[in-house]
Length: 238
Image 1 (tube, one colour):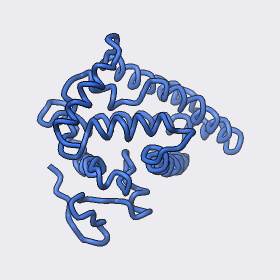
Image 2: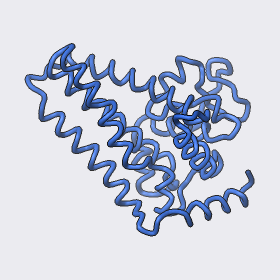
Image 3: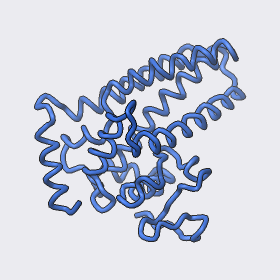
Image 4: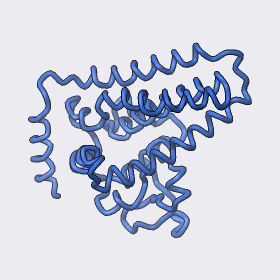
């Protein structure tokens, strides 16, 4: 798709957005909603010990695998069960943004960057609560709440980081994110993923490319599609 066709798609997409949509409200509900759940979970911890953090790490690793797999198999491969996810991700998001044009142009564009609010509800009801209950009965009270806190934090981290990769370069917010160690590399990985030739091949992780590295799907450069382990190429984040 050339630049002219993409701009036509963007105009059509924006025209289909409800006039009642508020990007600021959308982002606020996601951040405040998830943040409130995380805060609630932390208030339930009793006599927390540092050694219990092993469970946080284990939960995050499990999440990271799920992040990689769901993005790969559902986000870029059409299935009957997750066809709406495929349409929104590959059909909308990857058409709206490509590696050479990653920045949103207006607040209205946040709708195609941030997941719908119901995903927070779905994540809480289908993953955080059931997993927390299982962890509670298997390992004890704190572990149940730690699972809930960690999974909700992973959801929030995903949304915030993914949003940051599409910030307008040079903006105050983008300059703040650039101060975070490793953020420019994460943005680079996601930018490469938005190359149409690479999006079904790799860089599926958003929060940390752990399982992209493990499964050999980590790309630094879309031009030659060489993996770091094969090419020895050094990334050049801006």
